[in-house]
Image (cartoon, rainbow, N blue to C red; front, side, top):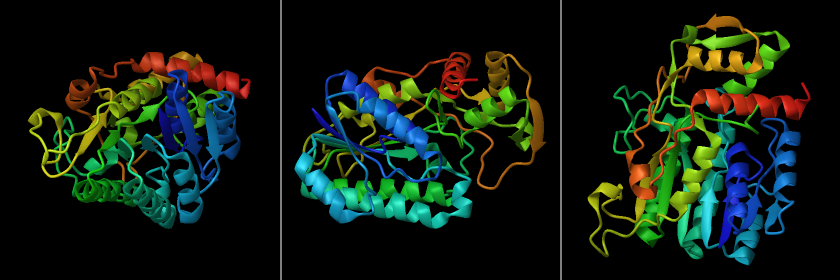
Length: 335
């Protein structure tokens, strides 16, 4: 089929596009190549995808409605997977406007095109950050998400709400998926695994927030990409048109659902650091710091709905995923 994937030069979009291409699909990737982090890394990802004859790339910003419309109307995708966004919890404290422009305006432009030229399924990325101040664990899709702690989380919650309203009004089958602390090869330089690995290899101190008293539901990138591709085949039905299984997480008034994608096994942050130390072969110099604004002490995904819909449950152990990342890091940077 014909897949339009936004953010294909990004960490997650790259892996999703590569998996779709390996399955024989045609993929049009859109990416703005923003300088939030190393653009050379993004271009390396795209260069790998462009080795496939069924991949094409367009370098535009989703905020450019005219350019986006031209590309979309010419390609006419069967399925749209929207992964492009301004990411990063901490960066939203410094540059909040970037989140409004990319996550709200860009997503709105795409949803207007999806409304006018409906694909078989529209999928968009959200985040575990929408659970905000929730303390009940594990996080279930039906939990309240009314208390975001950062503008990043607020914009992702807003895109979920926008997508639901469009699904209700225009009946476009829509799935929003919430990621939980994704890591792995080709990851983002602003993420903890990248920073920790770089620091430990260089013999430099690494910053560990909340004195290491944090749990994260670390999700390996290959598991995440597989889950997204499988969810693309789990097209939501409209409950207003036929009786549907109440266990499948559908909105009562739209062909819309939200699905957690996590490992379902929270790991202590210090255990994560120890896995990196083992893979690198060197102890970290640890700089313990207080909790940062917008952070939460724990994340923990209930992945029962994902398994019911796809038969798949992410399960890559942290030790395995971290070792693969360190191998990639050494190869990429020649260290």
